[in-house]
Image (cartoon, rainbow, N blue to C red):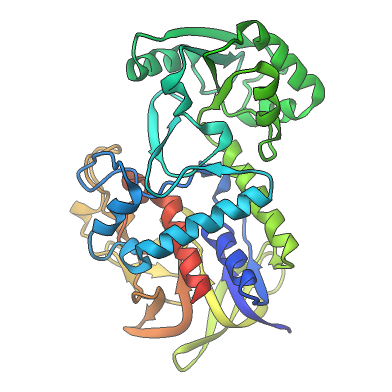
Length: 411
């Protein structure tokens, strides 16, 4: 049994970034991966802070995080670390051929799959919704038989936001892939990876191209990095903007592949189908964890552990009764601090944070975990395992994941 300097538990954004930063510190890293991770559900956008506690849009993310409430992860992470983490991320994805644009002090805007616009901080080049503001004509691209994408609704909603002074038109692409069922964005993205599919797609749009126009397309521009995007902008001779999409998130999957490629280049050991089950301690330090899938459990020793198993959505935290949250690997203390009456708002899209979303593992300011009221000296908690923020309400999920992973790995 070999011992690692660092064992990372979890294969979402926080887990992969924790492993990358640790390796870049010269550490021998093992990452325990179980399931597909959250990337098929992840936008792949880096939302730092989109909305404040009153639900108002934040103009400057980095300024706004300086004033978040006590107990929020950003208070523990610190503004300077958030900036460093964003720069690190941009360097990684650029080196892997999928550059992101944006900065810590200005919101970017992306077009959603229903034609609204949402704020974010860092976006891949293909999703720069800001380009719609300056276009004279917006060409909305629909795809025949594409599930959960209604181009006329997108057109109507965008026109309300961008203004009636622009021209709006619609073109429908026929992929001829239908085969008796609705298409997913992934079906079309795979088709776009092929030379024949790409050429057919461009041919059906070419007549609508022109100076001052922007094409708004569903998230279908290939499955790998920004290769298709770069090519289609050149071939059409005008801007192209992808929307967000319903799962599976093509951009989330692109980002996962990019980060896994970076892990491979650093020689990080990735153990698949390794569900962490239990931990062994010596005094106030974790010594090892046991993990496995269908086969017998294996023991993984390390000097340092980073917990990135997520919150309720991914099973990193569970709860049988109100106020009795449980973290299932290390037995960390969980903060829930809510009764049944305040566990959730009646409205899914509420003007207040959801009680259940604020639950998470209790940590010190350096993100080290607390267990039975005392510190676990070598266990750091990152991402959705953390307490004190509602990532959906705030639009802060990937920002917290990235920045907390960076801080924990550097510690």
